[in-house]
Amino acid sequence: MLLKKTILVEEATFSHDAKRLVRFLRDHDGEDLTFKDIAAGLDMKPRAANCMITSSLVNRGYAVRELQPDGGTNYIRLTDKGRTADLDETTSKTIEKYYNQKW
Image (cartoon, rainbow, N blue to C red; front, side):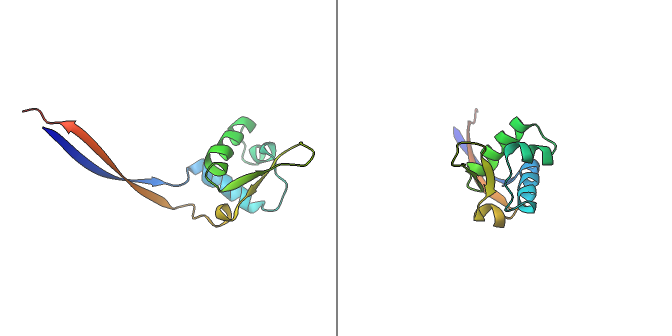
């Protein structure tokens, strides 16, 4: 017999590190910050900062990379969504699991 179990899971919208990142960008809003600047400000390696900015912020619409006309350094800027995001927000989702009941 096939049984279904439904589980409600709550997840934080932002990880601890992503919250630090957003707070840092909010504190420096309007400044020309590069990945290296942000990494130094948060005591992170530039590659780690780049990955986190891309996956946690840019890909989700909380920040953008501002391309420079000369093709040089990219600056990271919060979008309106990033400036106003509730960092303690959680999202809920339902997971359905199926399993066989053996008699």
